[in-house]
Length: 371
Image 1 (cartoon, helix red, strand yellow):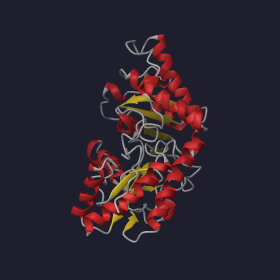
Image 2 (spheres, helix red, strand yellow):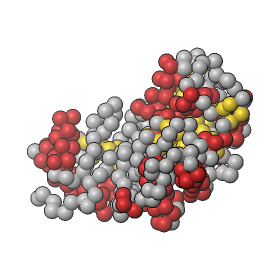
Image 3 (cartoon, one colour):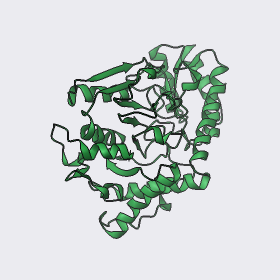
């Protein structure tokens, strides 16, 4: 039977992700619009977003937090181009974005002393191969594979190299061992459902030391430069951004941070996401035609949940289109480089009731395309 109840919010995209429950653009504080980001009011809004980010996430006091251009990608490229090359690099990758960082390191930066540690979609590489004397580059959560790093126990306390972590679909949804991470990047448009185009770059004291002590042999575009005269440009981490930010996006981000605070902080946003994963897990485990792409239960992402179906690629496409046409679920197809299947966002801005109302439609749509 065709279900009658639809999700109130059918936005299950993995980025940009669903806006927070109750979101109303008219509630944004737009007093900064039309003002220079260098004005007192503009810098205050940027500084407030940095301070609230640091406070809500429990980032150590001696870490820097900055807002940078070009989303999470910009934040990652900014640091890699500024700081890699001093020592060997270990790259752990198991999905498209992690593999992309390897490509940039080898083909664009042309570093020679690079160790590639891959794993196929659905699995994690062997982190025991990490050399504490090397820099390490990895994603915390594989947005396109639905496989996450379960913890940071494998990262050495005595490391000499830097841990450089793309955590864009993990921050605000998974516990982060900040002391084990030297460079952390994320974007507002993932777990918080913010607007795109801006990234957040978090630096440990060791990462700052690297920037101030090492000069790469290649030229750096202005947009990547974080030091001047051998010293960190502190303004970047106090609200004086490198290029002109969208103050409307900043207002939207502050609204999302206020929401996290109101629901009980990052612990509550993490709990919401794990509860959403439980809803999907119960469904998958009670069906024999749908499966998690992640092989290990402890490594299943609680944000970008990737699923495979006992169906042909054409049937999967038909199912996705059917749910889209019914206004039940938008943008849930697997990433283009990943195995055919579904990718359902389960971050904190998604309500469990909407996932619960989606699931009968998955049963119905699967029956339609495979009969």
